[in-house]
Length: 89
Image (cartoon, rainbow, N blue to C red; front, side, top):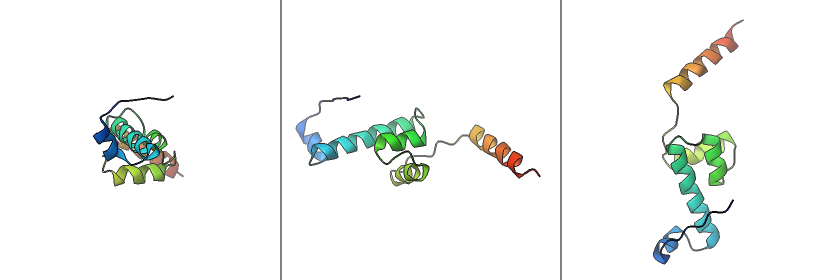
């Protein structure tokens, strides 16, 4: 899918010198915003931002841009229970 937005030229210049750079910066901004809102996962954010679906690449991108980690108390409890099951003899 392609999405086209219109912005003033002086804002386009801030986004980058080339169409490719502007496209990349816009995709990164959208990906980070959707992740911060909890609408997409870390891996999906990485895919949309163009760093790939690899967990660590997406995590590095998230940390670089200082986006908070979306990890709830429920996630912690689910991880604790999974670890408990795996560690049972």
